[in-house]
Each structure stands twice: as structure tokens, then as C-alpha cells.
Image (cartoon, rainbow, N blue to C red; front, top):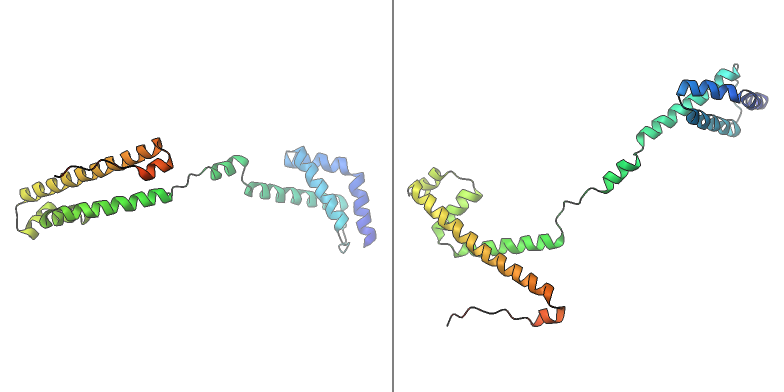
Length: 197
């Protein structure tokens, strides 16, 4: 059997140019044909010599074609460098820790503002905006007219928007001041308070 393997190797070397020409025609690529033949040689070098081959040329050609097909399948599964770059450039849409903290702060501010509303206005606002309840149903629940529901809702929304804007403007002022002063000055900074006296 070792004689058969050494005969295959000898035949491979003798018929290399013919094998490469036939393989190039079959595969449409001289480069792929050369790579497949190189892998075929490596298989012959590492083979244990257990098989008996009757038609050496056909066997060598078939082995090379199968290796080339395997290579093409493997390459088709690999991502191109452009595809890898595109995957790496995907933006992380998760909010940053700062965004989460700001969002929580805004929610706390809104909760406080909602508590400032009269109870009926707050309930109407929450029913309309949070529960998505129709105005007519809100009117029936509170035993008031739809027009009054709309007026209460508008007043509540305007109040909340005004208070949120003031909070937002204060937050912006603090940030702008922080950027202009160094960290030591920021710790000592005092913002003017409203004179309630």
C-alpha cells in the first residue's frame, strides 16, 4: 500500500501541469486551482497509505476538485472586511449612564410637578395621557362635561410644561456655568435665589 501512495505522489508530480490546466478550466481560477493542488499534495504527504487507487489521474483530480469546493464554501461563510467593518460600526443605542441618570431626574421632577396639581386635574391628566382614556369616558368618570375635561387637561399640561421648562432652563444654566468655571469654583458657586420677602 505504501507503494500505491508513493506511486500517487510520483504521478502527481509528473501530471501536475496537466492537472492544474484541467482544474483551472473546471474552477475558472488558476489561483484556486494552484491552492487546491497544493492542499492535495499535503494530503498525499500526510496520508497513511491505507487506500488502493486504480485510476491515479482521476483520483488526484477528484481530490483537488473537492478541496477547491470546500475552500469556496469556507470562503462564502467568511465575512468580507467591509462586512466586518460594518458590524463594528454599529452604534450602541443603549442609553449612557448619564442619560439614564438625567432621565430618572426628569421623572422625579415630573412626579413632583404632578403632585403640585389639584387632585382632579392630576387624575384627568393621568387618565388622558397615561391610560389613554377617551375624553368622554373621563367626563363620565368625574361627572363633568367633556369641555371641562378638555379645559382641565389643557391647564394641567400647560402647568407641567411650564414647570418642566423652568427646571430644564435651570439645568442648562448649571451645566453652562460648570463648563465655564473650574471644578473648585463650581463647588463654591452660588446661584441667586428668588426674593420671597
